[in-house]
Length: 97
Image 1 (tube, helix red, strand yellow):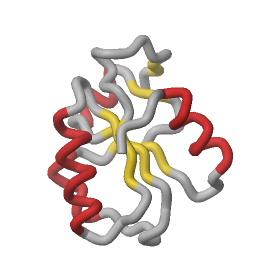
Image 2 (image 1 turned 120 degrees about the vertical axis):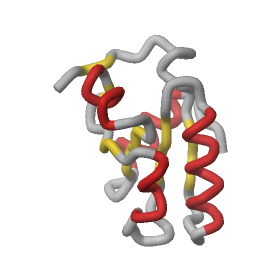
Image 3 (image 1 turned 60 degrees about the vertical axis):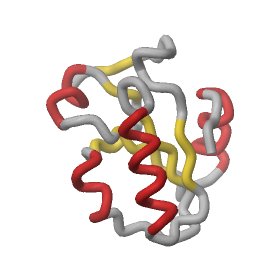
Image 4 (image 1 turned 90 degrees about the vertical axis):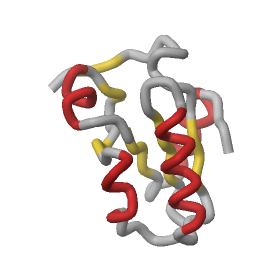
């Protein structure tokens, strides 16, 4: 399910268990990421250990990796998987570590 950044913010604010995952590489994450996001590169997505009904919001640079990650999570049985526009497609406020 594709969400606007505003819709995602509502879910992340209202759902206490919701998580925001950045599926880019750790290097890209360190260069700039969304506040409160967790770095979980696409090649590690199968290691996710959340409850199956946890709302999971995914993003990457252009949307390709987050779409692949969403497919993998749905196949694994997750029921609330969402993507938002990539950071190259939307003017997010990014933070650096």
